[in-house]
Image 1 (cartoon, helix red, strand yellow):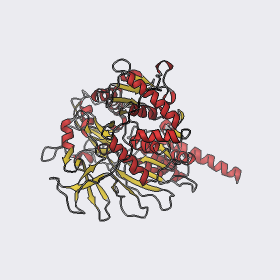
Image 2 (tube, one colour):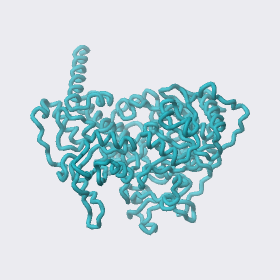
Image 3 (cartoon, one colour):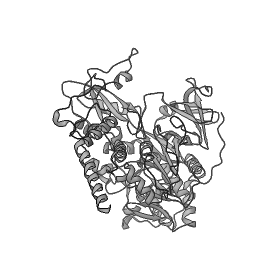
Image 4 (tube, one colour):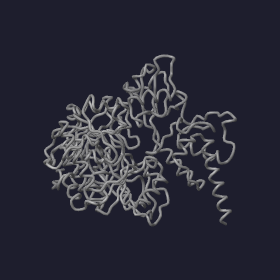
Length: 606
């Protein structure tokens, strides 16, 4: 199949230039740290760009971008573009060791940061940096004169950004994406969702996750406004729904687990939302008929500039939603092990070609050669994902060819987690699996073989692994084994691992634990909530004083629990309450207190 020939328009810098010239006073970004108009956004970015040039940043240099989701994040990223640099997206929430490793691995010549991250990343010492204050401002002493700074726009073949993904070698790998790929994403998004200057869009993804690229640049390229979702609402479906409605959001991206929770809620008829875009994990649910907006399922990887296929979800359809069909500028083929096309309807590996394909991995020529294939129509990327092409031209997603996992929208290489676990002196060997059905249910389980009698508990392991791994790569459950089970071919038997309970090696998941009398539910509310928790956490039983989060719960599962509690008891428990009161007894008490208060209100107003 030949690659589609696409004609690309201006790169993102030129597009934002136009918006600042035509609509200088229009809202560009709103965050918890304030707002910026398009003229303010461009002016502040130009000053930072000039400062970066003073520090020696040259065209094509890689510059670290280590900022929380905020107006400053957008200013810093645009400034690196204006300096003709390439931004390396880094989440400040990553462990210090991981942040420094990324900066060193990518050979960044400078870094843009804030006061909270300065000491952690060695800015000002090991490498020069630009310290941003509120809303992307600089200290007075460092503000350069930008009046006579020449403007050179990036070329389509120039690198735009680098985003790191989990690596099969035990270290993350940086994906280098060109401006042409970014421009293609912008132009497809604008046309597919009729995006215009009156739209109000969101920014919810981690700064180090490629979905943030998709949220920020198409929005600003058309003169729409970008609204940064408050941290406390990112995994709270009820609070997030109410915020989307109150902010008048018209287009939003939500990770799969969050989207699956929010589409089950009732929505007011006056909601402005037109499109809810989701992706990152396999979508297992469809939206109810008459929800009021279109749910769009998307598939892609960092190596294919975020989105490769996309399709609207039919609420009346049967079975799991598809991942849609290729977006403009993308060729999607289904190939066999010899990279030959399979018949329509047959299962094979999805291989992506076209302008969306990234340049390759930073400083990984061998890995780039293995995954990125040179062909007569340009570069192609082997996704490692199994799909089937349907008669309607859309793809069914069927899983992975290799051991790669997907957790809360992140592609996870088990080797990276295993390397970190094996570094613990009490662990001789290890393996990891993602268990659970839907995106929100899925948890990482670590299977450990001890070096001796010492077996650190879950909290100790969590602290140890958290020093080198981001939170989403740290398992929430552990199983201690005498040896890892192997197949007849000497490989780890993953099916055998999946049947093991986290508390008792070799015990099947359906083995029921005996709870002491004082740990058993005492009343109906506790019993009902216990049954919900047992299902969500995939445990045989739960005691009154057991901690939801210590049993493997996380914010995504917490969001799902909140929705279930609302449906069962007509109450609104917040994620903040759940973090502060994580035991079964406390959750039940919160539900009962709210039910009693609601009953009292009805009595007074009745």
